Image (cartoon, rainbow, N blue to C red; front, side, top):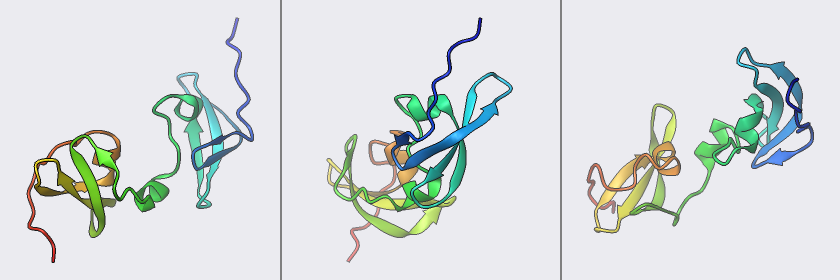
Length: 124
């Protein structure tokens, strides 16, 4: 007897709107066609949409997200930098200890980096 599958069509999860089903993965997970608010089409696992740490937008949108003033562990995002690391936008952050560091947005939002790893001079 199979499990009952939810119909997520039309639901919104963060920046994503579910357009409709896109079949089942080899592992038996439901796949969904989604469109991001930026216009990008994505295929997402249903549990990524509905789960606690689920996908809430495409990578492009998360890179443009303004996190200025938000706190991540002991770090506070000060400003987005022009430079990138492997396509990820970098942010200048200030630690509660007073030191500054450059961190990719992915490391901040996933909790990978919460304290100062490298130090940088205060920009003029």
